[in-house]
Amino acid sequence: MADVQDLKRLLSRLDGRGYKAYKELQGRRFDFPTFTLVVDHVQGDPFAPPSRLRVLVPQEVARFPRALYGSKSREVALRDALTREVDRALRAVSGRRGTGRSGLLAIDRPGQQVLERTSVFIDDERVEVRFVAGLPARGRTVLGREAIAMLCDDLPRVVERALFYEHLDADALRRHVETAEDADWLRARLEGLGLVAFVADGSVLPRRSGVDDRPMVEGAVPFRAPASLRVEVELPNAGRVTGMGVPKGVTLIVGGGYHGKSTLLRALELGVYNHIPGDGRERVVTDAGAVKVRAEDGRRVACVDISPFIADLPRGRSTTCFSTDDASGSTSQAANIMEALEAGARVLLLDEDTSATNFMIRDRRMQALIAKEHEPITPFLDKVRPLYRDHGVSTVLVMGGSGDYFDVADTVIAMIEFVPHDVTAQAKAIAQAYRTERRPEGGERFGRITPRVPLPESVDPSKGRKAVKLKVHDVEEIAFGAEEIDLSAVEQIVHPSQTRAIARALVHARRRYIDGRRTIPEILDAVMRDLDEQGLDVLSPSPLGDLARFRRYELAAALNRLRTLEVRQKRSA
Image (cartoon, rainbow, N blue to C red):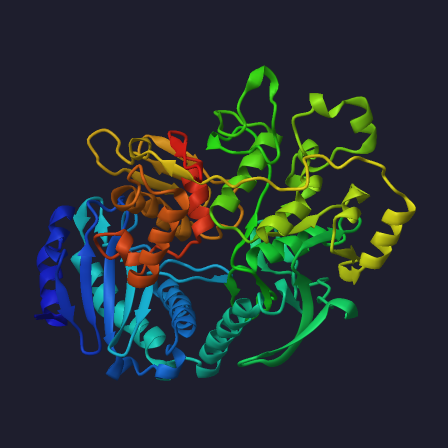
């Protein structure tokens, strides 16, 4: 096997040649004194996406204690922590070394969430790091000496600084791992506690801005649970922790504008993920089956049974197999809820600010003016309790404009100057004192949740001569073959690497499981089982370092937003 001296000689020989000469590196392995460098892919020119490389460090060199990665929860957290260490070290040495991307050294940079990624792997044998490099060139001429400095001088310093346990802050690594483990432990026990979410006392929920997900530095009010909702838990590492438990059932979050209602809901939305120490939301934990739902004007809908909410459309249009290329606010929100339920959601999260008003409420005066036989929509108000009673699906709803929901709520939390108060008793008393006299609509039962079977030919990732053509634009858009999938309204995708993995998972599902027989829930089960058993690498034939774990709900959302999707319903016998 070649060593570092062979790499230096090769790069010296390539100096001054055309850029494609770098292709001699592709598929090669080079042994350094403390690690092995693997070159998986070499870019075609200095302006192309950078080259993909890996570093393999034996554990007898790295020496990470097994206690830091001995469980799945700890392993994912340690991999996340090491990705951050490598990111810091690479940024310290990365710099322009010529034209285009020349000199770039980078790894998939995490955000505030702890996600399972393909950037770093660790086991008893070794630590593997996947990163990208812009191989240096001037114009399209190889700069061999600059490549030697980057790969043979800078890279070993990065490895030593970020991947040798003895050079890292052991307390910080342990805290990172234990914080994630505590969150996973608590999330797994919410069901037994009768909760859908937990928000620890002292949590900092506000963010710095709409584009900066770090915690607010000045002026943030630490969270303090109301006594009636305070729950005490004993975490494996942090010990005794108190906070607000959000019970199962129907929970309203009420309060005046700018008092923190949506901030609390947003924290609950992202409580399906673990957060890094210092984020402020480390102990904000939500049921893993919680899905944020909103109205989404203009989206395409493929044969969704929205009849629990909408029936008897004008001109006899079907709502048991509702399809449209341009959904309204109410039909899109109905479809989004039914698709989430089809995918297995256990909790729905809604905010009146992003909901269709006529979908959420129809008050007594409107009932008097427009008779029910002329109104096809059954408002969510009349379905939220049957949804919980019939299917066990809880709802957390931000509502500042309609007290009619007091009649159906189990718990009412008022945010007053960013502090939560349990006002359930007051809300119920008000509901008794000021009866709306509105007539419930839609019957006693929620209605059926009808699974659908995707047709294989409608899920086509090809474009032109390419059998698979994928491109991801940040977190919000996938170019899937000749189509664009708009994910801008899917609010629980937090990193572009999740979107990249979702795009590849659609291809994986199309090749293996979308066969015209399996339902969407069965397809989701199969894909997620593959990820559990084989990891994210099952989505790619070659090693990639920029994929992150996603949930089944966001995969379903992407499939449902593919504008070519065609399905047939699978009715129960």
